[in-house]
Length: 336
Image 1 (cartoon, one colour):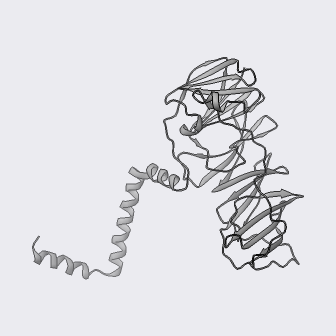
Image 2: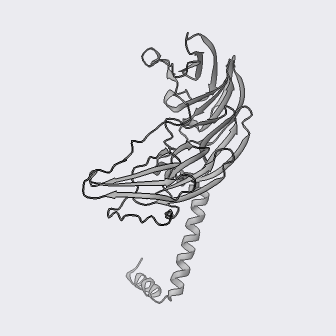
Image 3: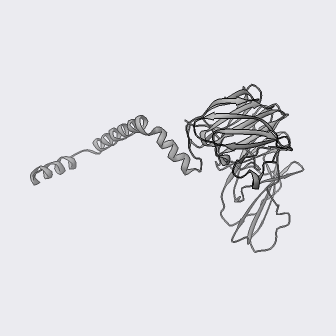
């Protein structure tokens, strides 16, 4: 291109009105959006999921090849169990008939989740409720308590209880509660100054906490678990101890466990359930008697070999629910 033509192009662009620049920008945005929608939507969501600590599907979905002494009941595909700390379990059992778990459809953005309750025998959904960015789930007094990184607005304080001012800035978390039988949201509020992602319960109260300056500053928030209102709040910023600072990580309902691999069964064992023992070998999941280690049955999955670290199992009476984390699938069987 000649120097004269370049000068002409620069001259022509310099003569454009501000509205013309806006129009050009709008055209660019439209074409870029169309390109993403056509070519990059799934990859974009997968990138977002990875950034938020939720891996996309690692291996293709599996099918059942053969079973022995096991009765297939139901399965669900494209379920991503999010990275939620729920006292060592992704599953919660209600009366041994209802299975509750956090889930996200693989085609949805990584920050959109549901808390889903299904009939453990039929797999039919009993209720489903939306939850956002969950970090932790607990059960207390007939409700699910979900800690989230999405801010829900400052929680109100009960009247006539002035709250102390804590000068340090902290992570802000929100708490939402859901009825354990219906999934209905009861309340959702945010609590500023909280940076310890845990909670403990006692006498209809929930205790939240924060700490800063290598533990010099401490914050303690007492919350009415029925309403979400702040009952009182204590703060120290001078290094003095704060009475009642809780020890967290108390256990809750939920009894899922991982199977052992065939190579590690001699050292790790598989006595995590006194009724059944599960061992992975290639594409096969062996089911043994938990005490005597007698062979009871197996499931052969078609597709990628099983990895014990990517499997969670929950046993409800004689129903075994198997979560294959690497293929985002749930399978349920009637055990022998």
